Length: 74
Image (cartoon, rainbow, N blue to C red; front, top):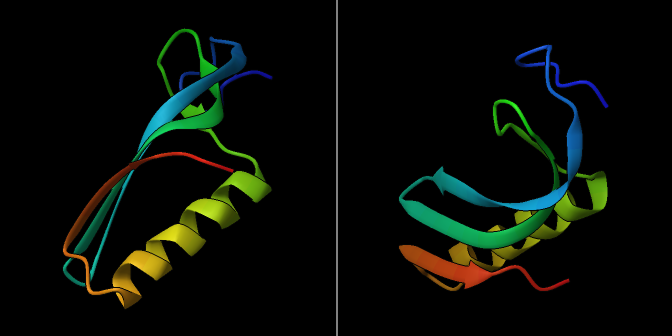
């Protein structure tokens, strides 16, 4: 697909790092599957991947974590 950010690059399957920061909890998740623009590096995540990342972030917050760094695992 054409990148909506740079409007020049095409996306290809790859991975990216997601950083979520909310109410004192920071989650860093590495190797998250995404379609990545080959020109600007913008990452686009599927609905399923996004739901999974948000679920993991909620679990980390409920567990009382302040900073949580992990690898993506479906």
